[in-house]
Length: 79
Image (cartoon, rainbow, N blue to C red; front, side, top):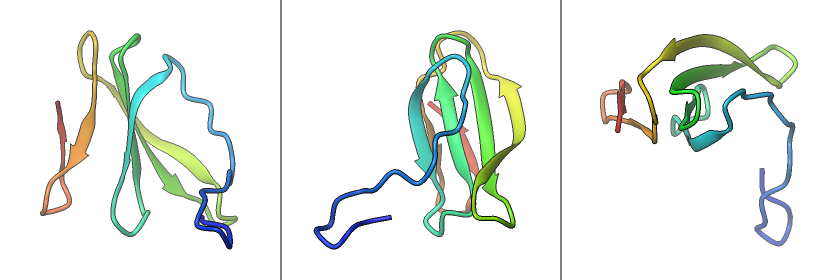
């Protein structure tokens, strides 16, 4: 969210083991992806009923997962 001055405001902190190197979201914010360089994990988060985000999927993508991007059709790709 943005404040009245156009600055991002902290909404919540989500535990993400491995320290994400990259965070990406769908345009509508319905899903958030993280790629963790240290652990090689990719995680998917979705909003809960209370507005916070919760982990819905995770996978080992290989060593040094660097980034995850959304494609035009809503699928993701690991880079």
